[in-house]
Length: 315
Image (cartoon, rainbow, N blue to C red; front, side):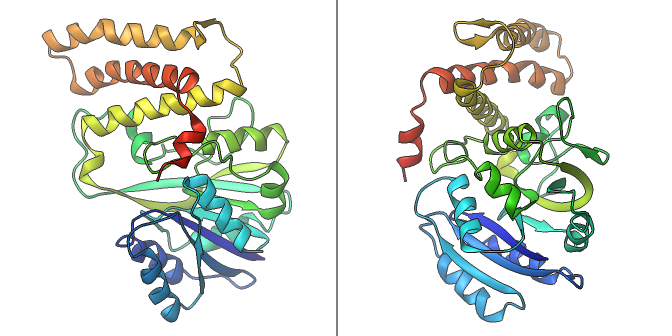
């Protein structure tokens, strides 16, 4: 089997060394060939120079791919087009793979019925997690929960995460890759590309697994441990859901073009905020009560106001 590992990056040249070093350091089992594709998403820093220097010393083929169309989905798709491996792996530029990552990939794809896998994200904290941060907000910093091995499908709690994801090329091409109407851009945090791709894979009956042994380590810098960051992330989480809702409405009741349950959660949370403040409730619960409000605002903006084409055209 041949595995192409795609690493999208945007203005993070100083961080690339860690992910590439982990990809070069991890043992590659017999029968698996690996190539690395760094997909530079129109960076303005010295990313190209850094990658060129890595190429001269890499023990695994390391390729530089330039993608000037802004967006994480565009970068990932460009990395895929540059390769030809039977398998395509995706990791992010602020991660490191576990030493057993390649072995897990080889083990799982030895079963011809397995078409894609995703796995666990373990945090590498650069600062202690704040006391007010609820567990439900860990998704905002790219940390997965403790899930057992399971299949994807209707009702499954497994979620595809593009920062730790491997798929057969045939399956990826069958569904058309990552949507270029989703994903992070230069000026915003659209983040629905993972969920949108997962939906298409499940709809096509493509067999996927959550494999807890497929582990990456995700850097959590202090700037991601502020209330401001998490409010902004939750807003864009709502924007992303709102954009998806334009083409795929949910089977629920709507009010003003918004699912009624989203209004309900936001109103209940806002109603609790005065009590949280004056009764000095648990800090985590207080912030958890605030989160649905920011999600509602984002959903309204994404559903009714965001110009997606303009969003991706900005540099």
